[in-house]
Image 1: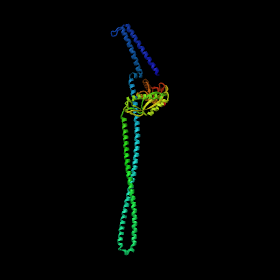
Image 2 (image 1 turned 45 degrees about the vertical axis):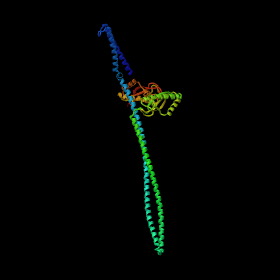
Image 3 (image 1 turned 30 degrees about the horizontal axis):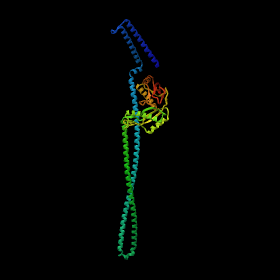
Image 4 (image 1 turned 135 degrees about the horizontal axis):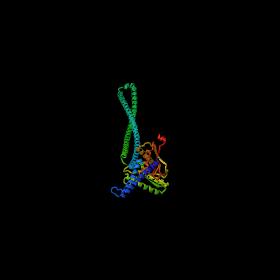
Length: 470
């Protein structure tokens, strides 16, 4: 249908141009025969002017006919620059917004995890503190009970002492009266023996109470020492607990400060961002592979320095994750063959002024898509230009993500996908022209290899499957 439309348009343009040329020729011949003159010029010059004006009319009529007959021509003539600027702005804004959203979500998850760990540690310390407090309360109760027993024992001892003193006085009184009551010795001997026996019993009880008192004093002293040790241990634990709380608060404040720096600071590189990619022929001697990787990293240094990253006191800005990691990559590439795509990927967010830490990721060269294979597709239901443009840009972004995930060599801007502006605009026009939902396919424009970029695709439009349309 579209081919017939173009052929008809060309035929009409040819017919109109031929008619105008014929009329111009007839007018030129008539002017030449009549020897007419315009603006005082010679007839020959007048005939030339008529011929030139005829050519101008033919060109103008052709452009006017194309403009009236084709929406694509009008778009190409009057809106091409606006469309290119809108495409570039939309793609940059989408990539920036998506990267920032992913980073904020990751930072929030890390902070929530750290806060949960800190909460668990604080709860554990609080539980230990409560257990120690309960033990201290128990020791205090035991001490109070022992002091009460000691007080009771002392009261009983005082009573025994008083009774002993009274008995002793009675005994002395009895000795004093012994001389006077010798006549009553027989009658009072029994009383004296009883008094002596009672005195012995009281002395024995006194000694027993004295021993109990000494044991209670020792127990109280032991409890007092235990209480003092518990107080010292509580003081140490309280100091350790307060120190722990201060350390945790310091860690939390540092994490908060770092988060604020991350949220307010300018990023030189995002986590997971590809700094640079190159192609290395694997299987070379180890020293040669090492040399090419070091050259590759120096190129990354220049890029990182241009974007604001730096290492204090050095003219470089890129650090490899570890020397062991670098040596492992060198050894792996030495033992392989064929071409390999090597990427330097940032392992964390890097603020301006900080060094960028990278890991080296390598992919073997392999055939990803054959010419004509569908890389990705999407269904477009809206006919609004803005919605169509957004859907096509999302499709191209998905193509780029697929290529990066499969290890393709990236361009300088970090992308891998490529589609011509004309193909993009033609696809937009085709989507608007077709009725109902349509399916837009991103088709490989040639054989796509990992180490041969870019991932060049062309966009094809076809009616959506029936189940989608319904």
